[in-house]
Length: 72
Image (cartoon, rainbow, N blue to C red; front, side, top):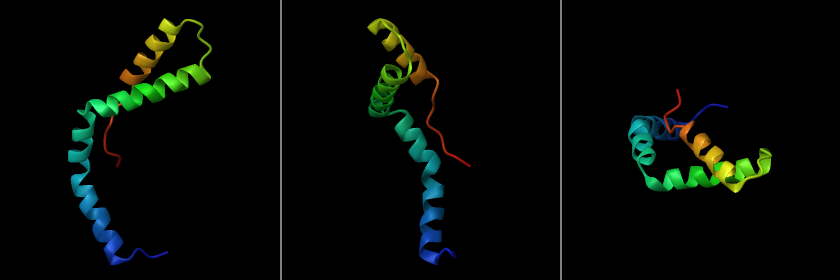
């Protein structure tokens, strides 16, 4: 399927702002809160840890292991 000129222009414009966007959201506390919430849900569902403190510690480690960046 051929891409039309409008879609191509939008894709190029977004590409030009991708790094600025990634930088802005990486520094936004809300993205950290969201990732922490998702990490906590993941740990609770997927990793059999008994202690709530251990769940929190593991979720924090997962949060610190991801980054927001542009894709090539």
